[in-house]
Every structure is written in C-alpha cells, then in structure tokens.
Length: 454
Image (cartoon, rainbow, N blue to C red):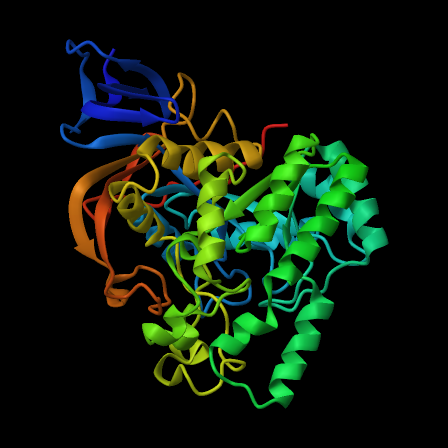
C-alpha cells in the first residue's frame, strides 16, 4: 500500500518527549511514528532533516470578522495568514454582525467560512442577556464553546446580568462545553475612562490607567466564583495581570475546572513600549499590555501550568482605525487590537531560542492546551495514532524580520513591524494536506469546520 505522506528524518517534539523519527500519514490521519529508517513508499515525502516536527499548532482566539466586517478580514485572508504562520486550526470569535448567538447566526458565519479556509476552524457562540435558551441548540450545531464579555471592548457586546450568567453556566455545564470570558469589570473601566478624559488625558498610557489590573482581577474572581458554584467549565481569555495568575492558581487548587490563556504580547511587550519604542496606539489592546512585573508572573504561570493556552487575539483593523500615522494624538480614538495569527509562532519560537521556555513547553500551550480546553482533543493537538494529521514543521535556526507589508491578513498594522525573529515555520500540514511551504500558500483551501468531542 502506498501511503499519502511521510515526514522523515525530523526531530519530533511533543510535550513530554523529543525523538528523531519519521511521521507516517495516511488518509488524513497519523498512522504511526517510526524510528526505523526502512520506510514504505508514499505519494509525498518531506525530508525534515534539521527541522522540528510539531503537532499542528492551534490559535484558539482569532477574529476573522465575518459576517459583517469583511473590510477588516475574512476566512480566506485570515486562514492564509494562519497557515503561513504555522497554525493548523483556529477558533473564531463571535463579536461580528450579527453576533453569533443562535443557530441562525452560526449558519451565516459557516456560509462565510466553508470552502474558503486553508486551516481547520471552530466557532464560539456569545452569551448575551436573553440568549441562554439557545445554548443547547448551539452545542448540537457544533460550536466549540461559548464566550461572555464581562468588559467593554470591540463590538460593544454587553455583559448579561449576574443572574443570567449563573443560569447560563448551569445550562452550559450540561452541554460539556467550556465558556471563556473577557475579564474586565465595566464599572471600573467606565469610571476611570471618564475621569481621565475630564483631566484632558489623551496620551497612550491613559489607556493602561483606565483599565487597571484590579479591574481584570475583579472580573476573574467573580467568574471563578460563579463557575465554582455552577460546577461549570471556565477559561479566562487573554490574561494580562499578575493578580489573575494568583487567582487562577488558587482556584485550580480547590478543584475548579478553570483554564487560563495569555498572548505573546503580554509576555514580550511592556506598557512603556508605547512611549519608549514609539508604538503609541499600535500597542493598544484590551486588556492592555502592562508593566514588566505582570509579564514576569505571566511567564511563571505559563511555565508551571497555571496558564495552559496561548491565543493571539488576532484583531485586524485598518490603519485609520489604529491611527497608525497619528498614534500619539488621542488614544481614546484608536481601536484596540492588531493581526497576530501570522506573527505568533515566530515570536514564541524566538522566546524558545532565548531560553524562556522549551519547545516541548511551547507545544503544550499552543497545541495540547487549546485542544483540551475546547474539546478538540484527541483529534487535534497531538501526533498520536489516529489523530488528524495536522503538523507544523519549524526551522529553529532560520531568522527573519517581521514586515507588516508582507502579512497575509487584510490588516497591515502591527506593533511587531521590524522585529527580528529566530525560528520560523517552514511547512504547515492540515489533515495530511500541505497548505504552506517556505512561507507560500500551497494548494486549494482544505479547512473544515471542527465540532467538539463531547
């Protein structure tokens, strides 16, 4: 029997092992890992000598902006950015037009995505006031999980009342799916924002002062309390504050099923970069990038397993929305976020090369962690026999420079323009299909909608 694909001579990296071997793929699935050099015939052979072969990396936090906001991004451009960035599966956020809050709006999103994605994809649904009755049907229709915005951000989707959140989490518990939260307390945000505006503050650091770490910690604490009460699964999206790490660790010790996600920008950037590096509004994100002491605790949480997921919060916008050419005039007018799905893996591999974490640890938080969080394990996030043949092959010695003009996203605005990186994805394989080679898209879109395993 002629096999479909063999990736030979690579260094195969999983969270708890590293070995030289050959990855054998057939009919879109991992057939086996072999350490023997006598190999069967295959239609396609990739010689990965000198390269590292990773389980397909997952970005569980992207905004591909459809339907309704296609001028910023769509599944074609967003998924190509993901594939070039070494990502094999994404999970898309629900704050679009209309918001993904019922089966009808889910079907609208799927119509925008199916047949147009180079990577596999899952979809979240949003919970708003009055929408809890849709939770079971959305689970049946295949959403990976749910999201609640406890704090104001892009899209201005209001938080449900606390009573409705508790009711919703009781219903979600019975679906077996997890709910993620945007953790910022609105009353603190609104009060401080108005206070700073009245003081005439427009500088970039006013954004940080308007969204202090206590606002994040308060929302995380409240969410953990509710989830513990309901015995429901919880994830804290885009953690930026050291207090949140401590709260998460204590909750895990009590047995609460809570997971944490952070992003590369919270680990490698500092608030003062808005001024010192001249980034201004380019580094505006919700929650904000904070000071060095917060990053240090986030790193500790990532390394000790308190934080189990890395997600980029890929948030494409136009240069005008980001005020790219006028980034210091009025921080309140600039929109938060930037495209991150293409730059994430090179940035994090650079941290591996710098000794901040091992490649095994990175695989755990960029492949296994997201797959387990959102019920895609064991189909995704590993190289075990029978898993989808999603593979990211990286060259840890290859160097490059991030160039905003070469990004595949519709958005060409990034605070990482000009950053030197060491460690680049050179192949992206989705269910046995090569979709990226040496930075170029290969073949047609093969991405499929991924329903969770429950």
